[in-house]
Image 1: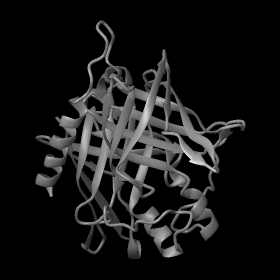
Image 2: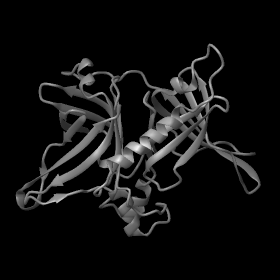
Image 3: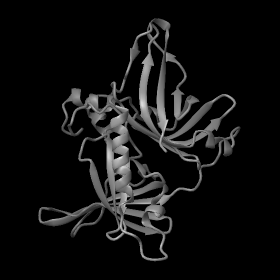
Image 4: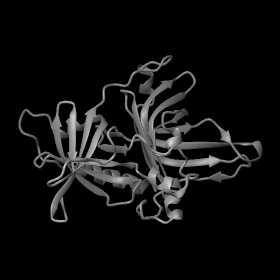
Length: 317
């Protein structure tokens, strides 16, 4: 499993550097993209019609480009049903699937001013590579999809982002403490030990995922079981729709670290499971070389017992 992943990273790393050089004296677009961006608007532009805000007037979202070539994106309406996808009625479960999430690597073509997102995981199944035209103006970034023809009219989507400043530090924490866990982390293993000793791998035996802890205090994570239905949420049968939710984890926000208690607190801005949106999520951490082990507080299990999850991540260098 790890050999396959390393090979993929080597290939996509090569892709990330095969770009056309920028004009002399101009900072490369790739460097300008690196950082955290807050979603401002997503608009469908159709010839002869007014733009349509596809995720509402004040959507939630972030896109993160790392200096090591990784990308992670989250986009969702601000208003979603307040329900767990596993328990929600079918109509609400479909509404909860209005959450665009994907992760992977990126490459920039300076000549065409385009960025290619090479997706290793995506909540809504689809093609691996997506291309966006880049328009940068100070702290604003506009990514535009390729134009298509719908009923003989040109149509495309315009996604506007705003660069995020460093996240404020919560009371009782320090900005310097974030450095202990800061970095890009690839998923190695995700397992839960039940009260009776049974071990479950909730995302399968070979899960994939990416956790980004930026030194500026922003964070985002996604985990996927790659063996999942290849169907679209809006047309999926109920069993497949539930499986799409069950096999994907995604949330983003800011974080603080307490080295004394080995505790990370993620202040969640949005979560694929809306019951966790706005909630502080705690993860206890430890290191072993390039491995980081994250463990949430024990959760109630069957017959009054407890279950404990342990998620293993490898630092991307």
